[in-house]
Length: 266
Ligand SMILES: C[S@@+](CC[C@H](N)C(=O)[O-])C[C@H]1O[C@@H](n2cnc3c(N)ncnc32)[C@H](O)[C@@H]1O
Image 1 (cartoon, rainbow, N blue to C red):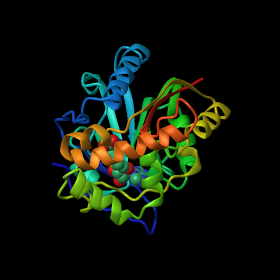
Image 2: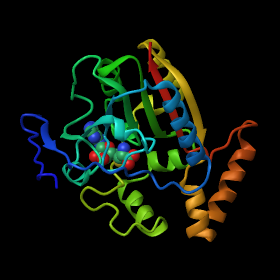
Image 3: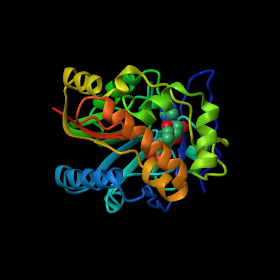
């Protein structure tokens, strides 16, 4: 068991919390669909591009769930930084779980082979600071995996402009997650810094020594999930999305609510 974590916001100090001794892998339970396909493609890129042998991996905002390929933790030292005390306490897979803010927490230069920041940048008011910290902490040739909602999609616009209580309601009543919004449980409040928008993220990365080697926009997993759990609601949302797609330029699909990006430090 992890010992209870405390956070001292007065001194903004991150407190080191020893992680569980036997790390277990908690993979995202994505329903079949584009998001899952893309994550599997991401795994292939990581397997191909990461060095063989022991790895140092930083999960920024790692929470208590990982998207790592299942065989990687066995040969990696995984360090998680998360701002939520309960998330840090519930983490069972990290070798080291640190209570801290990824926008300000700094590791030594060239420490990590891989930084994972999955479903986190939309929660940050200072995405630029976080990205520069990740870049500095990476070894040359190291990679950053980012998963995030697409602010230019139907779900992205609704998430960005709706109040937090609506997100909690959606998680509880549409997704069926009864403890949604409880301490340490998603959804977490969103901020949607301009750099969450894909073209801006790509330009910022390029200007700061990070090449985009993988990029895919995918249908939000909420759609297949909703079609399975709430077919009537899903039919209405699908009809709305189809109407919007018909109005927007050819090739637009407002269902592409998420993206996966891999950046490599040059
Ligand atoms: C939606 S969860 C994603 C967790 C995990 N990456 C995953 O994919 O399951 C967002 C996580 O980001 C964390 N978070 C939000 N702002 C943060 C910050 N400034 N520094 C560190 N963690 C943060 C939250 O506490 C939460 O654990």
